[in-house]
Length: 454
Image 1 (tube, rainbow, N blue to C red):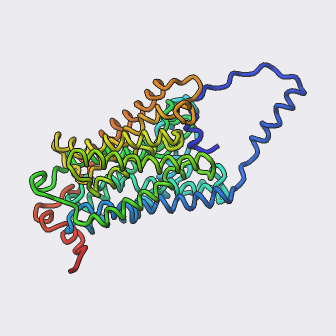
Image 2 (image 1 turned 90 degrees about the horizontal axis):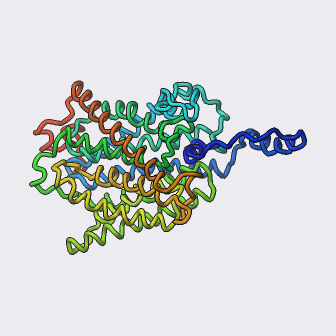
Image 3 (image 1 turned 30 degrees about the vertical axis):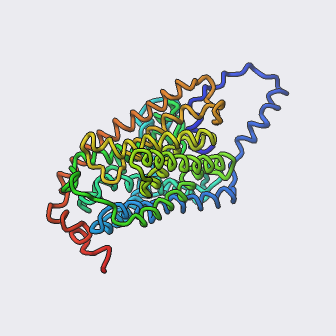
């Protein structure tokens, strides 16, 4: 059984012990049990789909997110954003193989319903991938493919945080913080949600099909903490700082939209009906959010901006992520529509109201969008609303409570640990560039290169 399938069904009660069977009945009952216990076999179709999905999710970071963010900063900082995304991709790829995959997904010693260290972090039995036979399978796909697929999630999550402190963080500080945050924050949360029976949040019935808590709320709260601790850009909010190249941003957003099919539909780890439904709800949620963000901005400001349309689409993609394996098409539209409006106000009003410079709206889109999606997952899983159905004995209100627990754990743990790790990083390497370097631009100050030589 796939690890995420186990997670989705973790809240189901144990089947009561049956009375003693007669010999004939026992033999008859043993036939399906033997069939179920038969070793899983490789599916070429599932494997081909997962290879494709892995490439699509990697596409989301490089070049998707890199272009999306790069276009929104000022021209003197465009290369710095591209460099950050590329460097994070390289760094996390190596750390994932060395110990990341093992700490997130090694389930040795875990017992459902038993809270111990393994409920919060995996073991090191798969460190360096040495504990994985070449022919090992996860479900019907090679474990190497599954591990690489999960690697792409680990890559994009810290890359998302970059947008919160864009144009002002030192490159060395970014690399050190990323390595620490990946180890101390991302891996435990990924394990608690996706680690299977015995993992803390999985055992408490939290539904997160493709990363609403693990990726988006996690990155969103870290981004908020980072921009608060590093401080606003020089001149913000009085100096205009418009995007320097919205063409890059639109191209990046389009790549994110396409890549998100791998992100959500790939999380089924099979080419089946659930993956097909995940693809459908992903498309309609993004579309609905783009329309509601655009419509809200149009009504309030008189014109629909291109940046608003693509930001709305991303907000919808974020919000549907945790529900993509459990919601139906109407649920996808509803989740996207709500996320488009809520994230518009979070990005345009919230940060100015509270005075934090979240440069590229990481918290406003990913943090708030992730919270909206995580909570609404508990609503639109209901079969009467087109969802896959609540676990036996679990009401909609109870499931929303499970979802709120997941949101709360990520916000509190992720926020506190992000603050501690930023503080530690700042004791080793200054977090922020000097005022002269910030004025000149990070491209020249940190990389001695220019994005444009005109």
